Structures are given as C-alpha cells and as structure tokens.
Image (tube, rainbow, N blue to C red; front, side, top):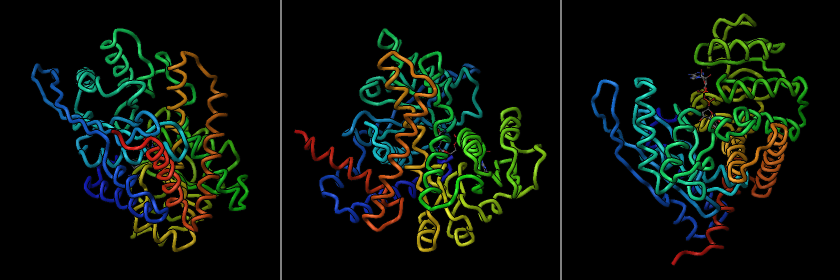
Length: 419
Ligand code: NAD
C-alpha cells in the first residue's frame, strides 16, 4: 500500500518532519545528526527456486534505524515498489511510533521487491526462508524483531520463526511477532490496532466534550484495522454512519448494523453485496459531516484537493500516512483536530511488544490481560501527547513527534557516542 507512493518523497518527508520537530524542541545537534541516518541497511540477493524449475533472484532489504531504546521492531513487506528510501522512511516512523507509546524498541523495517500476487505459496515460502537466512546475523530477539506488513501474513511469520530457529538449533519464538497462536502468537494481536484506534477515539471525544454514545463515525477501509475498529467503537456506543472499502461504501445516518456488516465482510472479503443504507463513494465518505473520520485504508487519501471539504470535527489516522503535509496544514489552520498515525495506530506494535514479552518468558496472558494492558498504554500515550501539544502550543502530530524524538534523544545522550 504505502509502496505505491513515490519513494523519494516518502524519505524526503520523513526527514523534513524530523528537521521541523528538531527545531521545535531545540534538539541536540548530535541527536539530530544521528537520527537522520539509519544505523544499518542490509541489502541482500535472494535466489529463489520457482515452481517451473527456474531460478529468480529477488532483492531484499532490512533497515535498522535506531537501537538506542531497545531492539529494532518493524514489519517486512513484499511488494513490487519496495525501495531502499521507502524502507528507511518506514523504519524511521517505527522508531517514533515505539517511542510515542514508550515501549523499549527502536525502529526497523524490511522489504522484498517482488509481486506475491503472482507467486505460489511454495515460491513465497522459498523466498521467505532464503531471505531470513540472509538476515540471520542481524535479526534476533535482542536485536531486531520483524513482524507482518503489506502482503506478509502470520503464515510467513511462522516460516520466519522456523527458519531462524533451524539456524540456532532450538525454537526462538521471540524472534518475530504476528506469528500463529500455536507458535506463541498473542491473543488480542489481531484486533489490537483497531482496538487502539477505538481507545484513542474515545479519549479524543472525551477531551473535546463530545459524548461517545451516539458519536458519528465515518470509516474508510474495512480490513484488519478498519473492521476491528468498527466492531469495537460500535460496542462502545458510537454510531458508524459510513463505511467503505475497495468495493464501495455504505451510508446510514442512524448507524450501520456493524456486527452484521463485519460478518458479511469476514465471509465475502468485501462490503459489496451487503444490504443496508445507501451507496456512497469514497470521496463522499471522506467529506461527510461526522464527529470522527477514520481513514484506515491507504496513505495520501486526504490531500490539498479535498482537505478543505472535510467536515469531520476530528480525524483519527488509522492508516499509516493518510494525510499529506499540505492537507495537514489545512486541517491545523482550520478547526479539525488530527490524531496522528504514530499515536493512533500504535496499538498493533504495542501488542507485538506484549507478544515478544510472552515469548521471552514462555508464558501466556489472557486476552483480557492483553486488552487491559493495551488500554493503559494507549490512554497514557494519548494524554502525554495531548499535554505536550498544549505545552508546545502545537498540533498533535508535532507533539507526538516531539515526544518521540525527545525520548530517543534522551537515550542517545545517556548512552553517549561509542567509542
Ligand atoms: P488490509 O489489507 O487488511 O485492509 C485494507 C482495507 O482498505 C481493505 O478493506 C481494502 O478494501 C481497503 N481499501 C483498499 N483500497 C481502497 C480504496 N481505494 N478505497 C477504499 N478502501 C480501500 O490492511 P490493514 O492491515 O487493515 O491496514 C490498513 C492501514 O493500516 C494501512 O495503512 C496499514 O499500514 C495500517 N496499519 C496496519 C496495522 C496492522 O496491525 N494491520 C498496524 C498499523 C498500521
């Protein structure tokens, strides 16, 4: 998904964001200099036996942006448009995201330039096992813990765990998160990102004095993130009045029947074919009057072209990078309150951290324990960002970045520069 954007722009904007926030908080120049570059970038060739007997050599990348607060954490994506610059930018964002929710990780990211939609499961397994073998010296529970991302599933994480374990000679479940439950995956992980977004939405409505009961929500994207969010926010009492996915959208001012809609999407994969409300297009959904707009599908959907037409009071960014910098300026100059992605969708990496803790300790928490701890982390992070925004007299995106960069900077200065 994010792989569809221009990779140079992605890194440029990640660096521009960092420079801006460094100026805002008067960041130590040593810290800024260190954070502008990834700690390590490894590029490998991945010879892969294809089903027709031929050999294809793919390119794989793993970037470790920063390890000052702990091991690197971040997903691996399989996509034709993966590039080094994009992986660096995504790794950098992971550093900020982990620091915002104050979990002891730095940021990492990986990618393989390939089109998995055109490959068999055997070919994907061959590619994964060879890629992991090439990464074996730089990943591990204490140094870099991958996870799923675009086009990589829990099955792929199972192969990753197995391949790494084969190289060590014993099982190492803590090398990866997002793995199947039977291999040490965590209860509550699947819904964690959506749950975190719902918790942050609840806190935002609260701070804005809008009752959660009956609050109106417009949701773009009904996948792993959007679907779980819709279920949880409607259980909390809000009304999802509009929802869309790639197949189309639905609108009902009284609220869509979410449990039936979610069952339909689980069964068919799409919103299309569900009988409720009236049909709407994506653009209409983004600009509809509502309390909270949650873009939870793609990046760059809120742009300079449509930002002026947005009538939501609050935007909670479920997707990564749904708002372009130009749109963000329009929202902050107007009166739209934006909860940025690095805070709003950090529930996923938070429960990944819980999964890693459970795997290291070889014990398992109940789903209730996972959800309670997630709630504590998300609520605390939300209020810390809100207070920092107030102190700095800035918006929530700058405040989240400021908090993150300051936390990483503090660790860098406390450790000092080696040697
Ligand atoms: P997904 O593939 O499960 O779901 C994506 C959804 O977006 C689907 O419903 C799809 O139909 C919809 N969609 C695609 N193109 C669309 C279009 N043009 N218009 C409207 N809808 C469209 O992916 P996901 O895991 O739910 O991820 C969604 C976003 O959240 C991504 O930006 C991802 O990076 C981000 N994110 C995901 C997680 C996670 O734990 N899965 C964590 C943090 C951030």
